[in-house]
Image: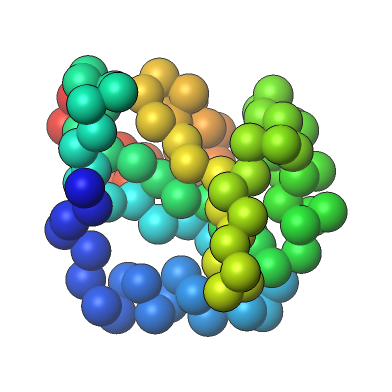
Length: 98
Protein backbone atom coordinates (compact mmCIF):
# COMPACT_ATOMS: atom_id res chain seq x y z
CA UNK A 1 0.00 0.00 0.00
CA UNK A 2 1.41 3.37 -1.02
CA UNK A 3 0.75 6.59 0.84
CA UNK A 4 2.31 9.94 1.62
CA UNK A 5 2.65 11.06 -2.00
CA UNK A 6 1.80 14.67 -2.73
CA UNK A 7 0.11 15.26 -6.07
CA UNK A 8 2.72 17.83 -7.14
CA UNK A 9 5.54 15.34 -6.37
CA UNK A 10 3.88 12.69 -8.52
CA UNK A 11 3.32 15.18 -11.35
CA UNK A 12 6.97 16.34 -11.21
CA UNK A 13 8.17 12.70 -11.27
CA UNK A 14 6.04 11.96 -14.33
CA UNK A 15 7.19 15.13 -16.11
CA UNK A 16 10.85 14.15 -15.64
CA UNK A 17 10.11 10.70 -17.00
CA UNK A 18 8.28 12.21 -19.97
CA UNK A 19 11.41 14.27 -20.73
CA UNK A 20 13.54 11.11 -20.74
CA UNK A 21 15.26 11.92 -17.45
CA UNK A 22 16.02 9.51 -14.63
CA UNK A 23 13.41 10.46 -12.02
CA UNK A 24 13.15 9.56 -8.33
CA UNK A 25 10.01 9.39 -6.18
CA UNK A 26 10.12 8.17 -2.60
CA UNK A 27 7.01 7.49 -0.58
CA UNK A 28 5.81 5.55 2.42
CA UNK A 29 4.88 2.00 1.60
CA UNK A 30 3.78 -1.11 3.44
CA UNK A 31 4.06 -4.60 2.06
CA UNK A 32 3.91 -7.78 4.14
CA UNK A 33 6.64 -9.29 1.95
CA UNK A 34 9.08 -6.63 3.20
CA UNK A 35 8.16 -5.94 6.84
CA UNK A 36 11.39 -4.06 7.61
CA UNK A 37 10.87 -1.55 4.80
CA UNK A 38 8.64 1.46 5.32
CA UNK A 39 9.50 3.39 2.14
CA UNK A 40 10.10 2.68 -1.52
CA UNK A 41 11.85 4.78 -4.12
CA UNK A 42 10.62 4.48 -7.67
CA UNK A 43 13.31 5.30 -10.23
CA UNK A 44 11.79 5.77 -13.65
CA UNK A 45 12.59 6.85 -17.20
CA UNK A 46 10.65 6.52 -20.46
CA UNK A 47 13.86 5.39 -22.19
CA UNK A 48 14.14 1.79 -20.98
CA UNK A 49 17.67 1.42 -22.34
CA UNK A 50 18.79 4.46 -20.38
CA UNK A 51 17.00 3.21 -17.26
CA UNK A 52 18.54 -0.24 -17.59
CA UNK A 53 22.02 1.27 -18.06
CA UNK A 54 21.52 3.48 -15.00
CA UNK A 55 20.43 0.43 -12.99
CA UNK A 56 23.37 -1.61 -14.21
CA UNK A 57 25.67 0.88 -12.48
CA UNK A 58 24.09 -0.21 -9.19
CA UNK A 59 23.83 -3.93 -9.86
CA UNK A 60 20.16 -3.77 -10.87
CA UNK A 61 18.99 -6.11 -13.59
CA UNK A 62 16.95 -4.97 -16.57
CA UNK A 63 14.35 -7.65 -15.83
CA UNK A 64 13.67 -5.94 -12.48
CA UNK A 65 12.17 -2.93 -14.24
CA UNK A 66 8.46 -2.72 -13.55
CA UNK A 67 7.18 -2.24 -17.11
CA UNK A 68 4.02 -0.14 -17.19
CA UNK A 69 1.75 0.43 -20.16
CA UNK A 70 1.20 4.04 -19.11
CA UNK A 71 4.88 4.81 -19.82
CA UNK A 72 5.99 5.20 -16.20
CA UNK A 73 8.20 2.14 -16.01
CA UNK A 74 10.55 2.07 -13.03
CA UNK A 75 12.78 0.21 -10.64
CA UNK A 76 11.53 -0.17 -7.07
CA UNK A 77 14.27 0.43 -4.51
CA UNK A 78 13.83 -0.71 -0.92
CA UNK A 79 15.93 -1.38 2.15
CA UNK A 80 19.69 -1.02 2.29
CA UNK A 81 20.05 -0.92 -1.49
CA UNK A 82 17.60 1.98 -1.60
CA UNK A 83 19.60 3.93 0.98
CA UNK A 84 22.94 3.16 -0.65
CA UNK A 85 21.77 4.25 -4.11
CA UNK A 86 20.11 7.42 -2.82
CA UNK A 87 23.31 8.39 -0.98
CA UNK A 88 25.41 7.78 -4.10
CA UNK A 89 22.96 9.86 -6.16
CA UNK A 90 23.19 12.71 -3.63
CA UNK A 91 19.52 12.38 -2.70
CA UNK A 92 19.74 12.20 1.08
CA UNK A 93 16.44 14.11 1.28
CA UNK A 94 14.78 10.92 -0.04
CA UNK A 95 16.02 8.86 2.92
CA UNK A 96 13.38 8.83 5.61
CA UNK A 97 13.54 7.16 9.00
CA UNK A 98 14.91 3.68 9.35
